[in-house]
Image (cartoon, rainbow, N blue to C red; front, top):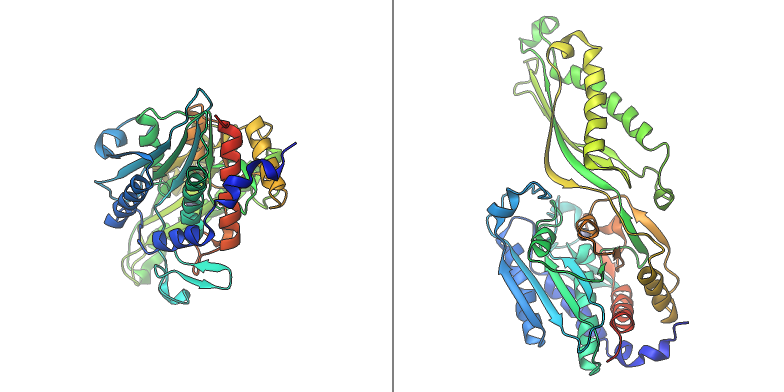
Length: 421
Ligand SMILES: [Zn+2]
């Protein structure tokens, strides 16, 4: 049985206006992956956490070395510089270590005309804080930070350590968390406050970025039947991929059954042709393939490659000019922590005891850093403010009441998990 009264000191210590101000400050730094602001926001965290009296470890990530390693999770933007930051609130005993990890990189704002204001000038409309990165996941970063501040401010000494980690490069692969694990960080449990609408997400489907090259034969459009259009040859490829997606989603893990498509296969870009009156001789399409829970990336890649190969074998032109499949960029494996793991159940109980509702437990259809942490043997769950549908969208928003609730739950849970000294 978890009682709210057992955590009153740290819950009341959560600085509501402070945590909202921190989200706003973080949103003003336009930390799009691959830009200098991605480094700037990391430096901001390092300075702020140092000023808070935490033990900060900030270092330059050796991008060339890590990106050459076989287990490297991929990178989709040019990046020569990246920083990693951790901050430790040390315990005074042999209690367990809790890692709170969040990414500070954001995706580009997209069409600015679709925004009601500047994406990097945060504004409050009612309880909604709007701005790129507010939901994904600067609100989560602020919540975990202010949870630890509340513990410090309440003068609570813990038996185990709490470690805050700010990482970059999550959106395009997971460079930051990969670097953190390379540094030798370990923990007994990890919470990633990605936007889960304060539900518990202990599993993620994976996502593998691919590129297809479909070849045709160029000729003048007035004699098109004597050429071969790469666009025409791409059409059956789309159909084959749709069938593949259908087949791969016939039976899914119970944690994933709430999603209309648990493991989506989607084409994101298509480029073909260089002249309106020329039959195009090349089409390049890029997309992402969902990886099922319990499936390896190798198995998923083979599934797509076989589907493409079967299609090509049945078409005389494609048999001679097979569609080329390239795997590049983010290669997110799936990941799964048993939802019955005691710390996950306990986190839900603490959240409920604080009067914030009963979190649902399910898997997310997207890839994230969770799989790297789980892969390194750190049981991990995502639990954070914001609805994932608002992430990456114009007028991205987060409800500030959820940010404060999350900070309170994280503070109480951390005390419960690490133990009072
Ligand atoms: Zn995110």
